[in-house]
Figure (cartoon, one colour):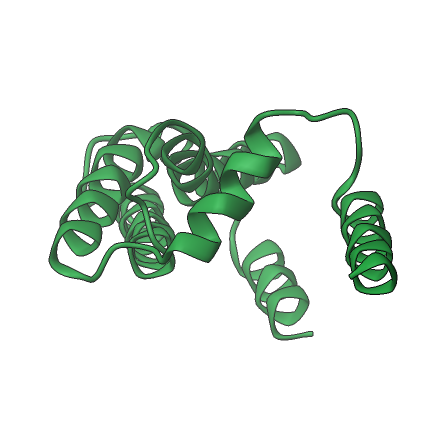
Length: 140
């Protein structure tokens, strides 16, 4: 609800055309979620603290760049704000991840199961393991 109200306020208070607003939205989305997504796929060390830091810093830097570009403080179009937000997001995610504890074994196993398809979903695997456990208990 807050995001919708904030977006409505921005749309009413700016004299930007709808295409510019869409480009701002793409810049904000790219600089917040892209880095967390790519690092979570490629780097097993990334933890929740690092991902959250990357998301917050990427959004903040991009929003400030859009705001500064709209008020003509920076000679940069707001649609290009992700050029500042993505590197800031990546730097924040990496630094926070390196100073916080690594993810636990359970999280790493879950990520491995998601990355490497085994032909069955997690629910099916859990059911199969429960059946094997019951069979071992009956035979033992």
